[in-house]
Image 1: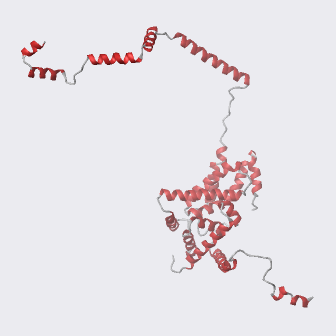
Image 2 (image 1 turned 180 degrees about the vertical axis):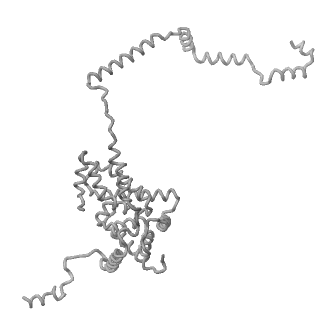
Image 3 (image 1 turned 135 degrees about the vertical axis):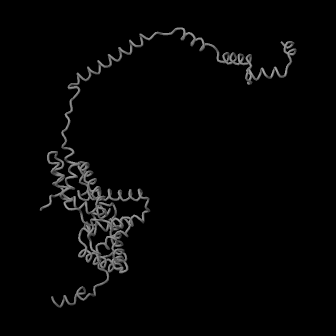
Length: 186
Length: 174
């Protein structure tokens, strides 16, 4: 199915008669991408479910004010990223977890999840990613899984392209070391 | 032409060091490492699916669409309540405001008119106002001086007198 262009979605949304249709098009184009982006950050399906709904409610409320300074999908990604990071920060505060131990809790969530059917390598990759600092994990996810360009990640995170390249490279080195370590098995 | 090409410095690789192109500092020092990292990620992509092993409940995305639409577009579909204008013209609006002010002003005026004035209170207040403050203070102090007050209770005082003075003392003293 041919995906509708963002410009067409925005044009339809600006017209009150076709606004609902535009939002339906936007949902069918982006809801799965945004869900997976959030899911890989917060790990738990129920948390991701709540957050993806919050994100699209915000998109609905603010799309009218959206100025085409940035691309539509980077704008939605930015909302999703901010919501996910805010959620993780609140989780740290609520459970009184130090910053470096939040990955431990996400690790437990990953192991206990009913909705993870990856094999040993996939589990090991997810665990390797959870050893990364939050920002590196975010950048690795967007580059590796979402296959976004550095310029797009820069627009979403507000970090320079150079810094993103360095972060991604460091993240890959850490993950590689983790994956090649035969002592870590599942 | 062919001989010329073979003898060309570029083809022989003998070209001078300066080509005009530059690279960032230490670019080649880390290039091998970066290529290896890239190769590693490409290899991983072939073994790890796009979702990284995560799954969702059956029919989740269909329900998600409905859940989001229920909180966004369908919420707006609720029947809009008709807004009835209170004033259809500016003349009516200003006339209403004028009537309100007239009624409120009349009520306030008649209310003030009907309140009885207590002239005695007013005169007493005025008299107190006219007396010098120092005179009032002196008057109060003088009254306090002429009425010494004992800290002891009457019963205690009576006991003390009966215990320490004879009847003769009391008769002569009085």
